[in-house]
Every structure is written in structure tokens, then in C-alpha cells.
Length: 212
Image (cartoon, rainbow, N blue to C red; front, side, top):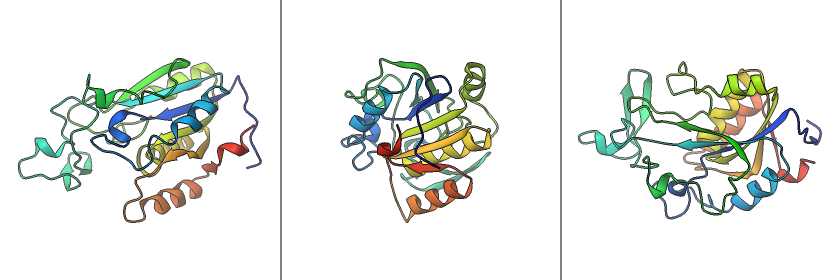
């Protein structure tokens, strides 16, 4: 893809899960998760359409290791919808950990998609719960607003950003991941794997400096 020029009518920036619990000091911190905030703020000032996603779990969420007898964070269990990683309790509804990072500019966001609020199923993608069938409603919103090209930023590159970008492409949107506006977990080469998957599916991965 050549350097994209932002179209204020048809382009949207989607900022994924830039929340306290995913930043240093949080319950499920990603290294340098807070370092991407200035890059995102610079980008969001240039887009006419900015959307946010927010992990929003009830305390009894089945993805929490604390809700499984003998379960430990990062174990894998089988759920009705397939394999599920168990996580430390994080982004619990109404807690500081679930709040957006304090320096993230959220004032211009026109929509916040909350995900993971159903206690029985986890949600990584901005478009679907992890059963890959239950929609968040984002696709319909974007289509009704005539938004056709989506730029993704946020946490984590190799989980929620990648899931969202792959679903975006599959839903027929032109999709760009802004690499330096994302932070990755990168456990056991998970970042390389995610980048390969996105590249194979036609997702563009570009630095913020190439977006005009």
C-alpha cells in the first residue's frame, strides 16, 4: 500500500483497549503499553471519526483464573466455544483498571464498543465475541456511517488488535494496523505469528509517519 492520505469522510481510527490494566502497573500489563498513547493522540487529532473499544468484564467472568478451581493465569481450558486462555482478573466493570489510560484523548470518540461483558464468553475482537458468531454491532455502525477504511491502534498487537484487524478485513473493510501506535505481548513469537496472519489476509501494517 502506498502512503495513505486520511479521508475525513470514509476513514476511521479504532483505538483498541488502551486501559489502565493493560498498561504498566496494571493487572495484565503489556510492556510499553503507555508509550503508544502520544502516538495515538496525534493520530486521533487527524481523523474525523474515532472509535474506542473497552474491555468490560463482570467479576464472575469465566476467563478469569480466579473463577476456576485450581486454575492459574495463562492456563488453557475448554469452553463451549473452544480453547480459552485464563487471565488474571482485569478490566472489571467500574474499576480503575477498566478505565481508559488517563493521558488518552477520548474527547473526540464518537463511539465506545464495550466487549467481554457477557460472563460466559470472552471477547478479543472489536467485531465478534470469541465464539466467532456473536456480533458487537460494530460492522453495522460502520456501514451505516459509510466508513470503509479502518486504521487500528492499541493493545495488544498480537491479540485484540490482530483479532480486530483480521475480522475487519473479513467483513470487507480496507484495514490498516498502525504499528508504532500498538503494543504487543509477544509471548512465544506471538507477534510474528500475528503479523504473518494479518499480512496473509491483506491487512496493511504501516508506521504512523506514513499516514498523511
